[in-house]
Amino acid sequence: MENEIDPGVIEKFLEELPEKAFHLGLRVVLAGLAFLMGVQLIRLIRKILKKTLERSKADISAMNFIDSFVKFALYFLLVLTIASGLGVDAASILAIVGSAGVAIGLALQGSLSNLAGGVLILVLKPFRVGDYIEDSNNRAGIVESIDIFYTHLLTYDNIAIVLPNGTLANGTITNYTQSELRRVIVPVSISYQADVKEARKVLLEALKEDPSVRKDKEMRVLVDALADSGVNLLVRCWVKQDDYWETKWRLTELVKDTLDEAGISIPFPQLDVHINRSE
Image (cartoon, rainbow, N blue to C red; front, side, top):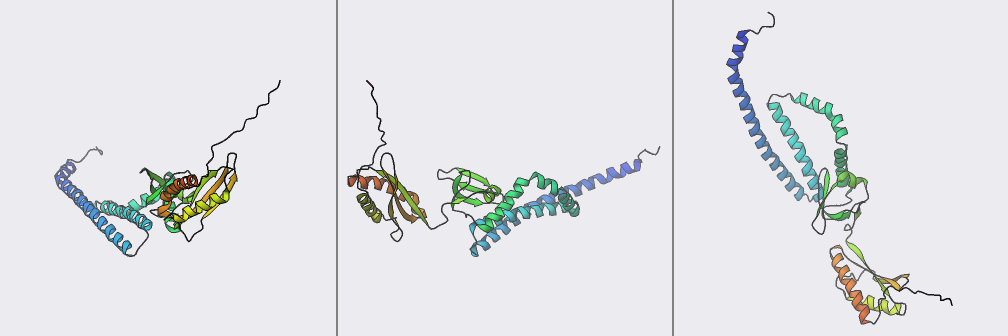
């Protein structure tokens, strides 16, 4: 019969099986060793690259992004090289990857958007590592790192926030620490019976005595509104970014103590009720 298998073929296959299994096992072992060596080589390359970027005084945000990109690219080349060593045609792999690129691109639209967003953040520099930012959804924190796809924030109470780069690049970003100085504004209300000029005088003197307030910048006490219960004032001055919160809290207490010492009262909310009695 035409479909019968030649016994000689089976016998030859069984004779060659141990040798083929040995060669296959040897290839697998060599591939494993090559992978371990490749991992160590990738670590060495990244280490050298990091030192080179540090010597060139590159921005830390760019350093983190480049390191993430190089790591991804080198691991891809390593896997491709090992697959070729195992007998897989590299051209076939690239063809498969290329043909699947459209499907992968559609499935990973978010990831590709994040990658493009990371590049935009790196180039345009709306913020850098160490800046305190807030996005359009009121998520705020200190920028810890900018990776290929995500930006990592750390809040003041040590909570980690991971934001997609695409969302950050296409949304509104408030950078609170980009400038060297920041204005401190302390609102306070005084009674209508108080002397506004006297309140302004004692508050300005208090500002001048504070060590963190910049004396070369504008210091003002302004009337903000004539409210229902009193006159609303704004105490404004400039401080360094690093001194902002401590100065704001200290000045808030200082304003209260200064007004108390000057005999200027801070009013409570008041409501006048008129009752018409009919006989």
